Length: 262
Image (cartoon, rainbow, N blue to C red; front, side):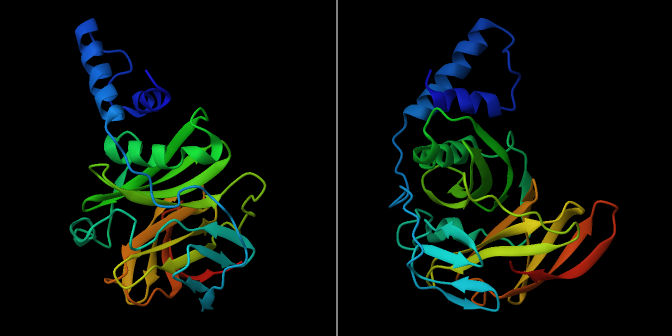
């Protein structure tokens, strides 16, 4: 049984110990078949951070076609090429602004497996993988993955046939703490008129959930361990500017607050 199989077993919602030996063999065989299926990692998936790319920043939002965005002092390495992200029009057509939250166990096993395989070069396939949670919008699942000191935002269709990922943070570039009731945008970009828009940032410890206002749309975000993220088809939201968010605090109160930048 290889490392990816072991990771999937740890995230499997079924009991850790099957009721009998027959069930155990069936489960392991099924996972091995999934892992053996051919996969295609995103184009240019090996990370090569660089601060030399030009980026247009408008009202705190980076809009670019190049695969690297720089906002404030944090470097975000983009792997969301609109011509090669592996998510077709049918995948993107099911996007909704209000996502369905998923625990790590509830996320599509195929989507998890694609994201685990796509990001294994940075820290090595043997590094411990932890999926904090995510969401599903139509046929696309998104999730935050921690592995060997790296944190990635990854998107894949629920059949595991393609996707895209980007670096949130890694060893040596920690995210600075933010005030308890603050929503901060670290990076946002749109890649081509038929591509994908993404955004991620930080939220203070008193923030339980948030809806970001992207252009003229209200879009729910994933929030795990103080990092929030969201995405949208570029053709659906053509104005990626993000100035406010509606947050729900841990005490149950709600408020609309400005989205700040570092």
